[in-house]
Amino acid sequence: MSEVILDCMGEACPVPLIKTQKKMATLSVGDTLIVQIDHSCAMKNVPEWARKEGYNVEIEEVAEGEWEIFIEKTK
Image (cartoon, rainbow, N blue to C red; front, side, top):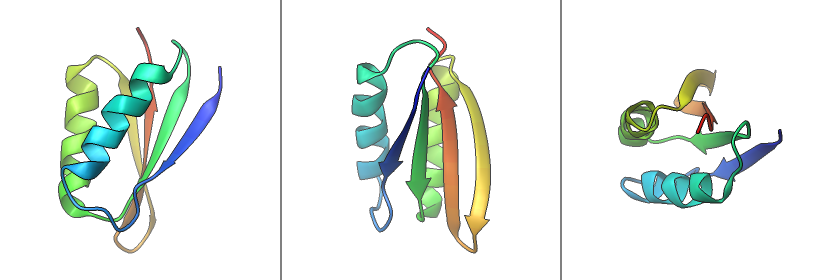
C-alpha cells in the first residue's frame, strides 16, 4: 500500500478530474491517491466521482482555498 501525490494546483475543471481518473487506473487496491487542488469546482467533482466508483474519500483543507483529497482504491 502506497501513497501517491497528484498535484493539480492551478488547474481548472475538468483537468483535475481527468488526471485523477487516469492516475487511479494505474494504482493497486489499497493504494491512496492524494489529489492537491485549489479549484472549488474540482473540490466537488473529484470526490463525487470517486465515491460513485466506490472508493473511500476524505477531504482536508490545508490552506485557504487549497485542499487535499485522499482517495483510497478499494477495488
